[in-house]
Image (tube, rainbow, N blue to C red; front, top):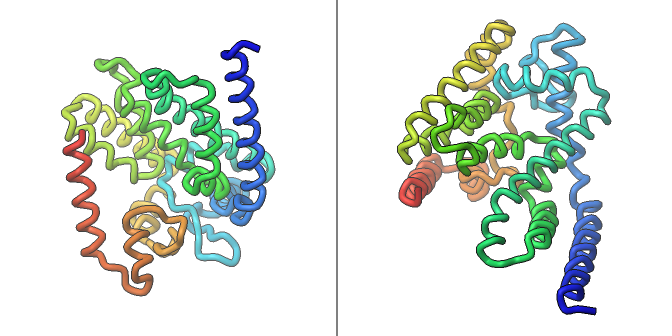
Amino acid sequence: MAQGARRTVGQVVAVVVLAVAVTAFLSVAAVRHGFFDLHVYRGALVWWVHDGGEIYDYLKPGTQYGFTYPPFAALVMLPMAYLSWHGAIVVSVAAGVATAAVLIWWLLDPVSRRAGWTRWFAFAVALCLAAAFEPMRETINFGQVNTLLLFLVAVDLLRLLPRDSRWAGVGIGLATAIKLTPGIFLIYLLATGRWRAALTATGTAAGATVLAAALFPDAAREFWTSALWNTGRVGELAFVSNQSLRGVVARLDPQSPSTLAWLALVAATVALWIRRS
C-alpha cells in the first residue's frame, strides 16, 4: 500500500475511533438537561399562539423561567408552535449542529491550508472535539440558539461578504434583534472603522425590532417595559454552564457577586479586544 493510502486509512480509523468515543461520552454527559431551554421556548410559543396567553407571562411549570428574548425572536421561532415536541428537538439539534459545523469549517480551513494539514481530517477531528466540549455540548442539549447567533455574527466578522457589500452588518443586526447581547459587536465594527457595516447592523436591528413591535404590539410593550428588566427570569448567575465573565465572578461569591470585579474584567477584556482588532 502506498504511503499516501496508508496515511488516509490511518486518518479514517482515527476519526472513527474519536467519533465513537465522543458519541459514548455524549450519551452520558449530554442527556441531563433534556432540552430545558427548548421546553421554555416552545412552551411559551404554544401558550401564546394556541392558548391565547401573553408570551412573557408564560413560566415553565414548576420553575421561574419564561421567554426572555425580544419579540423579533418570537417571530423567528414562531414555526416551533406548530411542531410536535420531538419535531422541535430534531430542528433544534439539526440547526445547532449544522451551524456549528459551518463555523468550524470557516475558522479552521484557512489554518489547515496554511499549515498543510489534510483539510477533511482536521475538520472531522475539530468537530468531534467541539461536540464533546462544554460550550457546544450544552448549547445543543439545552436547545439554545447560541450557534445560530454566532453564525450570523461570523458572516460579518469573518468578512465572508465582499468588503464593500451593502449586506455587511445584516448578520449582526439580526442577531442583536434576536438576543440583544450580540449588539456588543456593533462596538467592534465601530472600533475597527467599519462605519457602513455598523450603520447597516444598527438599521437592521432597529428595523427587525420595529417590525416585531408592529406585528405584536402587546408583546413588545411588555418586553421593553417589564420582561427585559426582570433578571430573575434568566437563571442563576453562578450556574456552571454560565461561561460569561459575570458567571465566573458569581461563582467566586454566589451570594454577593462583585459588580466592581465584573466591570474591571469587562473593561480589561474590551481593551484587549480593541487593541487586537
